[in-house]
Length: 306
Image (cartoon, rainbow, N blue to C red; front, side, top):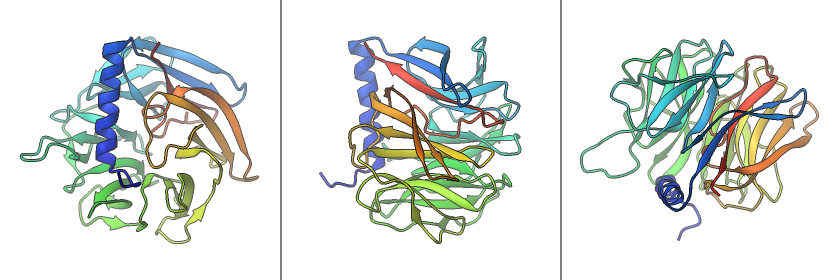
């Protein structure tokens, strides 16, 4: 198979893998919070089943995650779980997030499109409390990953002409703007808090590493270079760090579930990388922004399939 995997095929593989795990054993998903001050992990909610990708609310009181095509809101003390109304979008994947102004959700939904059996993800926005989704990206597949600081545009990875690159589009409509154009997979774009940079992961150097570029797509710069597969850089709200996930064994351009992974912290001042913790995870662990508003904590999902 070509070394550059089609993301749609990867997603189908992952879905099949998780279904197999569910049939062969009991998969436990654990929603955890990591404290930068103490270096400790705390499980706030766990369930026999599969959920993914927490976002932290702007008021700091709840987390949003996806499960079985739907979105749920969980209190940060794990005391309650409630479904969010996403209207006709009932096949949401793990690419979703809260606008910086706290008023909207961006979601990626695997739309039913006649004659198309896979790769139908498109991006929508809806009110933060839930409601009718509004289509943002008519083209598919498109997978949301970041909001502009002004909450008026989104950045995402999308396959156009059989290549995955990073794009931006206004939430009010118009043409999408292509920001990368490399032969390998570019994924996981997210703005810095001040809007100066977009962080992303890319195969441009031959292995999956964390990169950043100016918000206009210029001055692309590789930030990591090691033996791991590095994905999904999430800048802290205070602009001091980004947290990212590393597969301990090279995965090429794939990000499969249920692998040995680490969460690591990149200090943007010193450029030093600190390993925070190890566990079983990967796809679904930290695909989307999950920092607390005060930059002291972030949320993630770990798994146990034994």
